[in-house]
Amino acid sequence: MRIMKKIYEGKAKIVYELDDTAEECLIEYKNSLTAFDGTKKDSIAGKGSLNARISAKIFEFLSNNGVDTHFVKLENLGEDRFAHVCKKVTILPLEVVCRNIAAGSFSRRYGVQEGTPLKNPVIEFFLKNDALHDPLITEQGAVSLGLATPTEIEYLKTQALLINELLRYFFDRLGLILVDFKLEFGRTSDGRILLADEITPDTVRIWDKKTLEIVDKDRFRRDLGNVLGAYEDLWNRIQDNPLIVGEHPSLKFHVFFSVRMHPTVPDSSGMILKRALEWMGFGAVSHVVSGRLMRITFTNAMLNHELVTRLTDVAQNMLTNPAIEEYLMSFEVESGTSLPLIKESIKRD
Ligand code: UDP
Image (cartoon, rainbow, N blue to C red; front, side, top):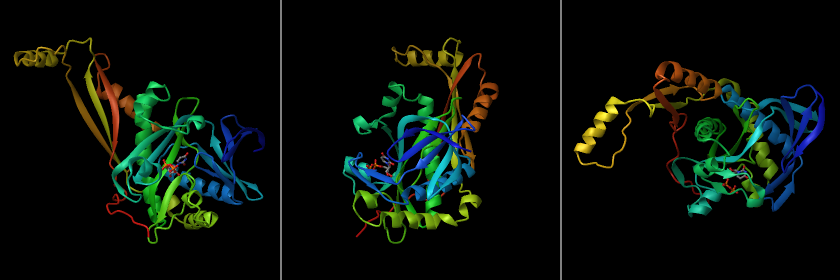
């Protein structure tokens, strides 16, 4: 492998072309640290290489659990410079945030005490746009602007919730509580959606289970000091932990197929119900379509591109008659399969 020219430099990373493949690129982690929309800046020697190694281990753990990611391998460039060889993707202009405990912008926006456990994990989308300060965007907003299709939004939410289950388990094994995190996804040239970017203390909130000490970028945001020490602490916890290769936390999710008659096909059950409704005085009912709902539950599996492709095949060839029926596939993740959700509020002194 030989690094070719720099193709992009952002706030936290530099992307290079590789001479031996057009499908992959090299992403180097920088030492720079920014917060509050880039208004607070610093550079900490050694932070980039720590983050590259931390993110590599987390991506390996997620890949071992069936998550489709852009990560290929960690590359030591020498002189304490580390990079990731990654599959080339076009990053979706959406940040996907998942929260277990109120903190940061969620606490500010809704006036909720930091440390308040959420009854269920919350997914939020933010538009990646520096000029607009990355505003919160609704699912309908994202679809209406053509940033993702409804099916892609459904897939991103399910991915984020399943990754949350995996990461909560991962950090729990390291003696840490996962408060929230941000994910980015990218599209390959053949249309697959892969988990991309990084998962590091710059993009997650993690608190020590016993001391509640902050082990992430909030140390920098809030001038708590010892930023590098916290990142080193995390790396030391991760480094020799066997769970990265060995352990597979249990995941559970449901796939729903709602099947209904194609609108152009005469639907006798629908017509009978329509007549009954008219007889009961519902004069304004113009059409009734009948159908059926199927729920398939997966345990100890991951929803990824391969599974969706196979399920689509099953739906078209087994579950429905495509000549007269149409279907919609949707997903539901069971939270707390790997680890029960926190119920007690977490109060720091
Ligand atoms: N986050 C991130 N990049 C961003 C914004 C947020 O990695 O541009 C992460 C952040 O570290 C936290 C989570 O996403 O783990 C939720 O961040 P929040 O919306 O609370 O914003 P913040 O208060 O961190 O600005």
